[in-house]
Length: 379
Image 1: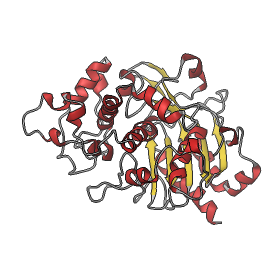
Image 2: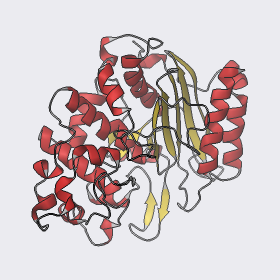
Image 3: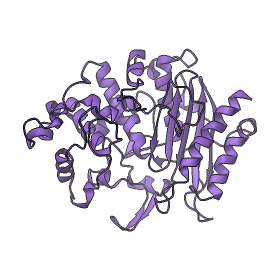
Image 4: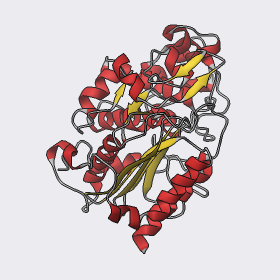
């Protein structure tokens, strides 16, 4: 298997910089245009790490710390796949999770206060994973809920905006509830369970919820928050709902590094690709589990699989990832894409929301970066 020590600890060698020169230019130009102040990134092909490098700084200040290959980032909604979906995959594989189980069977309060016949009674775990539950995409629950209990209660009470399965709408509340449903299955905190059952077996030595105080200064800040916490957000989860939930939730809260995310991808690829390494510690997921969760769920036209996204028109993955690819984005400016056919993984971690979250320049950077990486394989 790939030992953590095989992840290069320093900048990519000259050969990689030459081969992937176009991708480097995309990122250098993005920093120059203030799409983000710094980034770390990596490319895995088969069992070989072709690139593991970093550019820029924590902020736009010239004396700000430089981003390195081991810099820890708030990966935002990558939490949904690296922690929550991975937990669902493993529990399903072990026979502990039924995809078509109603959410109400695990979270009775989800329907306890609703009228008979409310469509919420028909929402299943599959709906939550596929973002087809009918729940809204995003709600500022933190504006009125100041404790974890109050925020969860508010989330449980949210009315559906569509019939379950009728449409796809990417939903943070859905993954908040999914995380709580998984805790009902495991009878354990999601952060503790994933650390023991997923991160440790895959040797993700830097991946964690709620970084301790002594690590915070070594994490790039995500935002100058002028409306809620009224301070610079550094080393604590940026997402406000996750913050009120204690910093660890099904939809956000995870911090990780490029090296760890490449190893996580290896844990996926080792199950389905003959081009990837073998090793007991990496074989956490069965091939059938990967194939099931990587399959699009519908309704027609949706790119969503179970927890994962798949390439679509104008996808952040660019034009060259195969249809048999899975990935996800993080609001803070992070992305993970895994091509299950070619066994190619690309990780990009940034703090694009610094100093304020309004900039959307990352939307042009991601597909251009991914295309430049994949085009380098064809040259």
